[in-house]
Image (tube, rainbow, N blue to C red; front, side):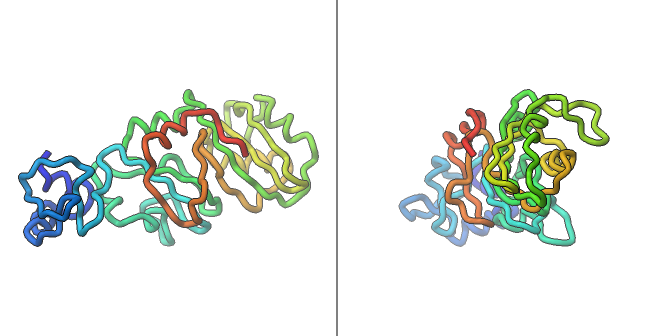
Length: 237
């Protein structure tokens, strides 16, 4: 693929814009040598305004989602894409969130432009474990763990029982819940069905991938070995 098309597809501008960037000497190699549109160089040696070129197709980004941000491209308020570089929203193929977190849920949210990877992660067959930390309005009764693990729990308006989930009690009103499904508002609805109300909710991990030290509201690109962690056994809460 010619460099002009490659860089345009990564969201840096139209082909006309990128051609102008070449003419202005803004696209160089790792040694600062100006590149030309017909040059053939390794992707990881290309620099735009002295910054490494974004990864090619197969990009996976992790965001520590803050409160009050919607997992949508269009919303009257702030959306998760506002927290990413604007060029990420115009890459081709498009960058999409891997599932969603509601406006009032914080924590680990993934994005990718790899449609096959996205569907692999969210597929029920993959059974990728997701760990959520919740604070509750009422004390736990003590039987929630057995209920959630039963494999027979039904949510209102659902036709299939929930897959078994694992509850770890951290305090009277503090717990972690590990689920392998991604039903609508699932964790909140599970606690509601058990007679409680979730006050705060944070996703800690997806498979073996955790937030680590990533600050709230910040993002970073994942390396291949980190993406592989998504399909490894779930992290310990």
